[in-house]
Length: 338
Image 1: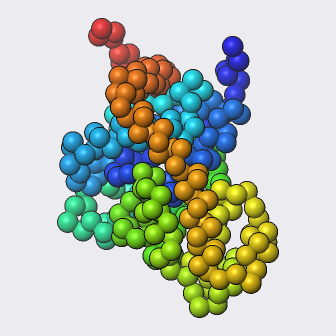
Image 2: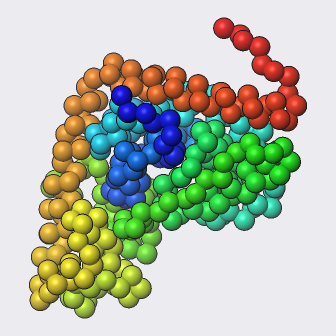
């Protein structure tokens, strides 16, 4: 059996606030998968982060299980990765509280995502929304994480994680590793098909967001309606041609072709031809994932086995860090309760 002890550790996760999007796959999961052989890999369904907004409880539970199925269907092999649901490992909440006491109010006030989400959910600006980056820091620091594969919009959260860890280490010694954010070269930020100046999001309008469980017909229809421009030339210009640049990023992510190669491939052809080609390539890539996820979702016992085993392994790793932190801050050693 291959020894993974010496491998560096990668950790990441996605909130189950809705169905997984094409942006989640290309900006996160596909990137995670590419590094599984090189890194000891820990991926979770971050359901604790999800409740900063009001969600239907039954829907949240269903989304969490569905997301786990899609993780596996997309190629995250449970034999090679630790896959679990965040709320099943109490250490995430335990460490988050300690780190809250080493995080400055001003730091959290400056977080871009807090400002954005406060504006979007003005009727529910709760403390969890404010301290969200501290829980994310706990998620990462619990596992001696070396790298955190994230999208561009999450980079700031890894940076404040490093700041919190550095502050703690300066007081108590080298307790935490300082993680490094890693962004995918292509597909790091897939934009809405209907509003290409905004990130593709689960909360996006129906036409702008590709969902991994969309049928081929729905995917093709959404690509055909994608917003472009009047230039009719397929070339990469993320400032003046945001819609086409976004479609080129998607095409490049699935085909492995450079933007120059894509430009040459579609030279003299209209946007209709290009949109259809992007749609067909996306369908071919997503179809087997969707079909495998649907198969897995019929086997609830298997999925429970995976998330239970993953939580047990994650809890063992995380408890060592919590014990270390508790000792450093002066808590009495926890007794064995069971």
